Amino acid sequence: MDLNQITIPSLDVEKATTFYKTLGLHLIVDAIPGYVRFECPDGDSTFSIHKVDLLPKGSGVTIYFEDNNLDNLVSNLQEKGIIFTQLPEDKSWLWREAHLQDPDGNNIILYHAGKNRKNPPWRIK
Image (cartoon, rainbow, N blue to C red):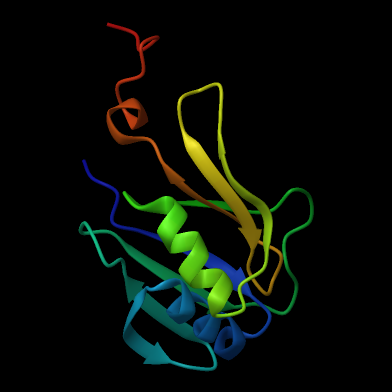
């Protein structure tokens, strides 16, 4: 089994589309105002957004995107006007993370973990 895609809710798919294109995702299905689908610049996963009238309550959705050049990516996105709630920081779980939110308040973590993404020192054998 492999993960194909994640679909997130949005009150404004067009606004969300602009945001995720700025992050570097490539639009492959455009059915605005109801639905869009992207492919990630690396790997084989896709990411989609669908229109909703109400966003889920609670802590919502957290989306992780890995990039080998995290600090450069964050700098480039800041130059494009993307606001971060946390700049790149080394975490105790051996990931380097930067945090932000999309226009609908979904949490996004841009990170670099390398081999520690799937094989941290504490991985069950």
